[in-house]
Image (cartoon, rainbow, N blue to C red):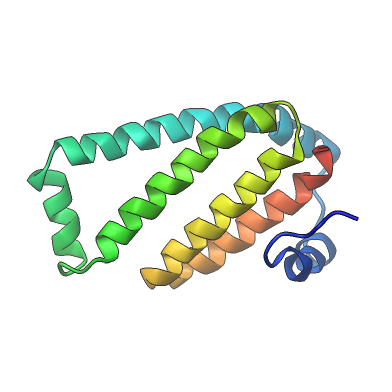
Length: 144
């Protein structure tokens, strides 16, 4: 029997039982083209982070001001970088339809939600979590 991931046992009945199922064509599209779209988005996101660091006070200074000079801005930057790196790590397993790729996406989503919680972005936490877990649980059976 396969070991469940953190919170997977609790979330599975919600997102597979109470949310509507995707049509098979949609699931197949997400599994076939999703890794490539995610790869492009991760590269653009990492380039954006590098650009922000390169701009120094212009970009990062605005972020510090927006968060009142607290560490929340830096926590957000670090978590975003980790999530983008996980996306890059997930590309090959997802392309090869390996369950390890799905697990990496699952952990990336949990990290994203943790960042939303730490930054008290409750709307992002609720909406992003609902949509993210719904999509993830819909495509999980496509990975071996």
